[in-house]
Structure formats: structure tokens, C-alpha cells
Image (cartoon, rainbow, N blue to C red; front, side):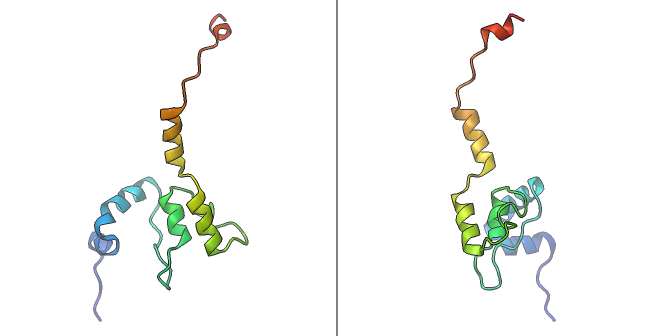
Length: 102
């Protein structure tokens, strides 16, 4: 029985040129779920992981099917991007003169 590659070699085969990026994101989040289902369709759980959301944030919503999950994830905001945008674009709050006099 032929066996496929294991360990880092398996990740290189599975993720191709994205293996290093996937490995880095896994160190910051959790292990990557399978990207596709048995029919070869994109899995919402993988998109959820890519966006850095907790497992089940969207996919654990009762009554929300695969198409609705992908729509919600596609229309969502990646938390890390939103935080960086606020840091870059939001003007600093001016100091309150009354607060510094106390």
C-alpha cells in the first residue's frame, strides 16, 4: 500500500506555495481545517480560520447553511484588518484640559 508524504513534506504537497504562510498563521491561531469538502467545494470553516475568527463564530450558528455561512464570511470584516485601519485612520483624541488639571 503506497503511503503519501508525512509532516512538513505533506504540508508542502497539501498547501503548495502557500505552505509557509499557512504554517505561520497556524502558529498564531489554530491548526488549519481542510480547505474543501468531499465534493471539492470551499469549506466555510476554512474561511473562518483564514479570517482569524474563533472556530464556530459563523459556522456554529444554528440554521445557517453553507451558502449563507460563506455569504456572511465574505461580507464580514477581518478583525486584524479593522484594528489596523482604526490605528492608521482614526485621529488621536485630544486631551481634555479639565482631566489634566486634577
